[in-house]
Amino acid sequence: MAKIHPTAVIDPGAELAASVSVGPYSIIGADVRVGEDTVIHGHVVLDGPMTIGARNEFYPFAAIGALSQDKTARRDEPTSTVIGDDNVIREYVSVQRGTMKEWDTKQGVTRIGDRNLIMNYCHIAHDCVIGSDVIMANNASLAGHVEIGDFAGLGGYTLVYQFCRIGAHAFTAFSSGIAGDVPPFVLVQGNPAEARAINKTGLSRRGFSKAAIEAIEEAYKLIYRSGKLMADVRRELAERAPTSPEVAQMEAFIAAGKRPLAR
Image (cartoon, rainbow, N blue to C red):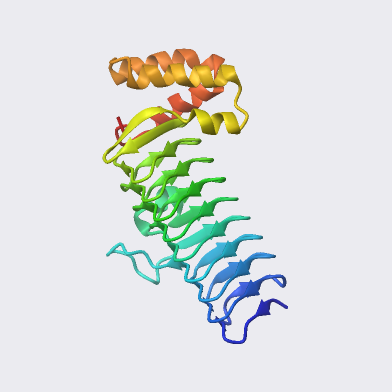
């Protein structure tokens, strides 16, 4: 049996693995499924429909899976929140379930991957997709429909406008205001945020080779420093892509964009 504090309120329609721990005064609603070895500290609210994987940890006053703040959202719609494994979600974090607005592509799901660290007071709005190994520092906030790639880092108080994307291994400095897409490996700063460099320190720490980092840096200069038209930039990136998986990743990210780049 799950270890549940006597003051916790668990809806009969919730499903908790036998190794789950639930602290005092936490509330778990109907249609919430919680995987093994997950720790739910006191005063946490989990609202369904929601699926939570294994070995996650939710700290006090986190509110996860609530109905979106989008005015069109309705509680009886088939939307949900899906959280993977090994995430740490700290105090006062809010994550809201998806909406019908992206049913064709996301099935109304707000999705968080694996091994993410979501620090105090962060907000993840409806229909966001967070990859794996992401760090969101205190008070970072995502508007609806935002996508964050694997290993991205968001500095404290970063604000991301709706429908923006932040690529894998990118980094936003503290208090960045993101109003456009940030390609993989790029570091941005300011409000509105501007590209400053590549995330060289992060790439070195993650074992990227010197050759890979040099290829990324040359691609960065082409995108942000060459002064060329974006059509020409994309053509040159495509030419370089066969010899560099990282450049190919940058080119594919830009090609799939619906918003302009954060310049």
